[in-house]
Image (cartoon, rainbow, N blue to C red):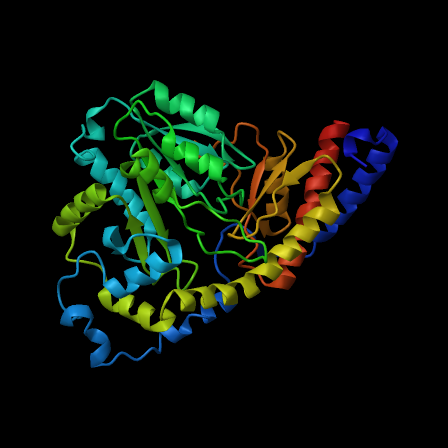
Length: 425
């Protein structure tokens, strides 16, 4: 029965039970963490072959006889590009391989357009103010990049199939200082939603006032499925090509949750003109990223099939974590009318939506009970959730026993705070 449909006496009795249960958790001296979407130790162990992967002289010499120990090969070695191209449906000829962080490549992209402009357009620094569209709830590190550059962030709600495209199109068409949108199109951080074919089509076909409108397409979880019914995401460049908007998109991803987050490889893929422009600037900025790390990844993963095999192993580890979290939410909060969430088929997060005005109270009580959550507001620009209702849950890092206990505390705390709000006590 929904809490709002219970009579006051019954809800007050439930509230008193929840207070006693919470006090028990608080007295237990817990130290649990659901705050960051980090791989657990078992996931990291899958990549230990990278550390003892022997490289001999034949591995150093690539296609065309190029010695990967030396200078050169600015945009990355062809062998690693081919793995990504085959796995993701990208063009290896317009792909640039970076270091371990795709976030670094995104930051560079924004900085480049601020300083030099995009494809001959006016540099963004020459405007009094520029703006970006931000689907919310969204990824806190995206917002941090935009805020660092003083970019005004315009919030657009995430719906069940992606951003509210009516609103996105309205904003993009009306103002040439709206320079782009930043998003995670598959298993979005934190909602776990994948953009529908219709949303991708509209993203490619929509009219924009700014000729240099840029979509930061952060496909971080492109192959991070963990169920037998994975989501599918349309190939954005195939659709953009039909509409002549290929220059609009910057596609990013990395091996951060495939191999080692701190020692992997990343990529940016773009149209040929945008690729050429990035490569030209990179030629001044660097002599190239770590090619031997790229070689190690090629030898370890072998090919796209090897990459797929690795992700199946990752899924076997990740899936039980999400099953525990989803069961706890369903059994503990389902049908009460005080919370809702989307059960994702992949990715790293669950977005929990509570009654307005309760998220901060839940966060503080969880902290007092020894359970760390992502800060309230992190999933919104400027760290401000206008409804104080969203919590991002990251189930992967704790052990299964720790996760189970943390979810018990969470369910109790959510019910406690919401019952208190309804009762007005």
